[in-house]
Length: 70
Image (cartoon, rainbow, N blue to C red; front, side, top):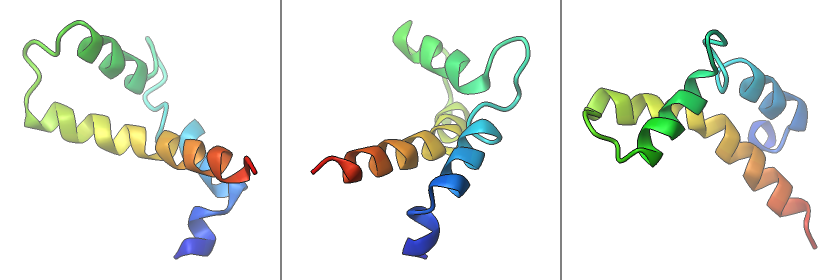
């Protein structure tokens, strides 16, 4: 499993697909971040789960980037 989490190509593909989908009118994760920054008023459990699922690829990318720093 770790070899998949350390694969840059796979993590980038996840970021560009699941991490950003749906793309229009704005990336979904960006809308969730704006909602949270605005106080998360009206966010239910499903919205938080949705945020985690769309944010996971970005967290994996950040993990890989930090792992490369000596």
